[in-house]
Image (cartoon, rainbow, N blue to C red; front, side, top):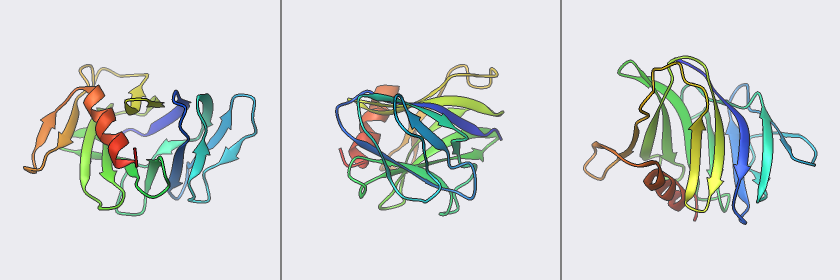
Amino acid sequence: MGVGWIDNIYNNTSSTWFLQSVDSSHNGAIQPDGGSQFTLDDGAFHALIGPKHYHADWCGIPWYYQGRHFKAFSLDKSANVQFYTSQVDSKNWIYFLDGLTGNILARKEAPKVDFHCNLRFESGGPQIDIVNDDGSTQEVLNQIYTEAKSWATIAISALGTLLKSKAGG
């Protein structure tokens, strides 16, 4: 299973989004263009004012969840979406959970090796763009976990809308 590294965060909205990291390492150091660097080591939500670009160093997407390792984004620091990576059925996935209920919302296929990505906050909702690919995810799958407790493949725009609604938007 590969580690996901967030290299850039783009808040392309006029809203303030919040990012939290709860992990034992690689929480991340974030530096806004023209601003001072801050770290995500304290487990608190940190404001990402928009529209603005942020450079991220050592900002890993946790490998596994177990209720203790995740990153989360939110519009109000209450409702939130937690995300982490996990290997299931020989594939590497980024899972998205409702941070209030723990219910699985969606998953996105990721490379089986270390990968780099950008986290974008758009008017239609958050997106994670994988920027390098070893060929294991040439046709990236985005899936939502439906009320029928099954996976449905969806377009990236639908995923963003779902994640935004669960993050307080």
